[in-house]
Length: 116
Image 1 (tube, rainbow, N blue to C red):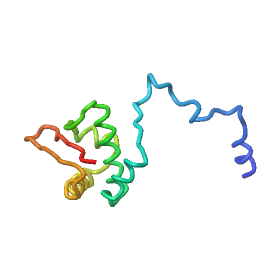
Image 2 (cartoon, helix red, strand yellow):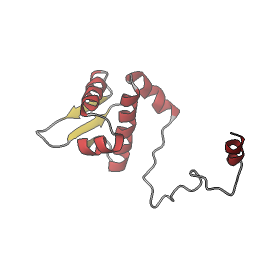
Image 3 (cartoon, rainbow, N blue to C red):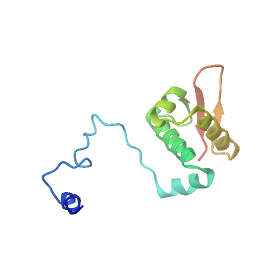
């Protein structure tokens, strides 16, 4: 046990935070303000919904979209590892509380517009 504590202060070991890849190879980061969180938190009722909201916000920024952007279900499932049922339930809830508008055209990827 004491060895584990001593390891915390051992500078010779690698630090996963300090050894993180540089910005050229890592995924893009997004900034989230406290004001944005104050607007979004009342809309979500589960951790999964919050994860999807954060993913949608990131997706909008990555797509460089001001309004509508595509949401490929496969990408959402692969990146977050949520079940299809969880995703459907979260999107339905977010639509009902007025957080998003969803447009579905056939079997193509749905398009989403964020309202927060």
